[in-house]
Image 1 (cartoon, each protein chain N blue to C red):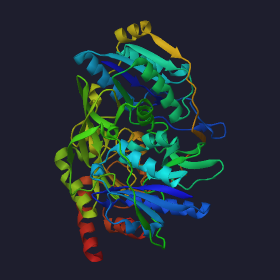
Image 2 (cartoon, chains in turn cyan, green):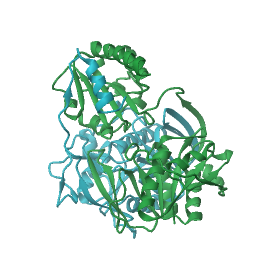
Image 3 (cartoon, rainbow over the protein chains, first blue to last red):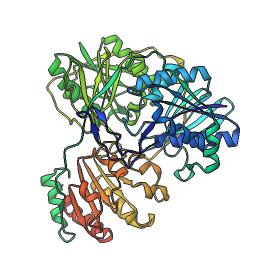
Image 4 (spheres, chains in turn brown, purple):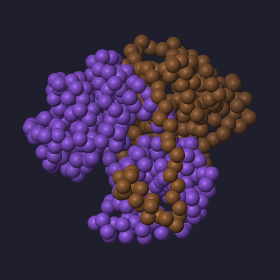
Length: 248
Length: 322
């Protein structure tokens, strides 16, 4: 089985979010970048397939050279090879177009991407990629098995979960649950050394138009002080929620 | 020219988000002079949409569409948009909408802005405000395509009733077998409980509750309020509660009217998941818990004393106000 894992290079979940250049750009100063958490669950599941069922795992990212440490980390975790499409990931459709070309040229059986990246939260790349390539698509995936040419996936729905089946090739929008958080891997020294020797191919981007642009950013208005209520006066809390906030 | 909206329903009944999307489209149409056409799939009472400003309902009735299917639903909405010549298509930002939206966007060659929280700031160029960075910021997104797809964030715009009645028209899109290539084989859904996605109020517990055996009071508080229950990441990691209740950056987002956090310190990843909630109440014994900085109301106290007392007070309040 040939597996492609799409990796986003995103600010660490604890990052403070600031903007620069008159609030038109994300300020990367002091920000540590990581593999998008939803992608990391997918990468770990791909490693499971590689080890248990036999598979090759390629990771791909659309981004500038600054994203290579993130791809190298994926190689150190155990991916076999990496591809970087050398373009700024400014629009979900543009990214999906780039990934579609990589997917079609590599004839992958299984493509795993995170349900959304934690920076722009577009959640559009896996679905667009599926539409552009014609592959089946399962989103918010929290479990995945592959037998022969058939995938069985569990996906989260409002108030529960459902099981779906489809044939390969399939594109998965993955998230926590695809593997347990305790199963996520930290690269060891051997993995890091081996990753240096693995192939990282840089492709120039395919022709594609952006459909959207992030033109300006704003931070939420500063919040007022919390109103503290004594634990001995919970009637006051109920009064505030009823009369002031009007939520009960 | 009509603005097309997809009005989500479950078991024939419109979800609140359907009326939110209708309200948003009506307000936008008021600015642009457009009309509002809704596409409703297997919904029973389409006349309800007229109360929120819908002019026309395309009524799709097809057993093959009785369960949600992203590709088939996107096909229906896409064909409706093409039939109506709609240049603006508006859906909600719930889990199913986010599943079908990118498929629909490719079909319509439409630029897509999800998690939108306000009417467009400008029409030429088309700019709309949406959340980004897990609700830690907003982003003004410019859509440059002819057809625009907007995903309205839940609870961000509110319901606006309008005068009028919606005309109804039967609509039978042609569905392809390929739409049904992903087959649902089993569904495991908690019935009779409020889901986090639909809840107006969410009651959430954290590590401060010390163990899963103490969740009874969280459930009771939720029962009194008609709320959904949720939890912080460590709680789901330890297996005290299912993953589906984990609220936060890598869990579920919450955009409820009221979020009550009990024994949750307020890690930045948790706050990112609940920022879109309107009113936040924190109950925590640690006055230095970071959550107090993000909360509207707080009680510094032992959850095992405060929550049972609050349940009793709320029961009295309900009895007096029912």
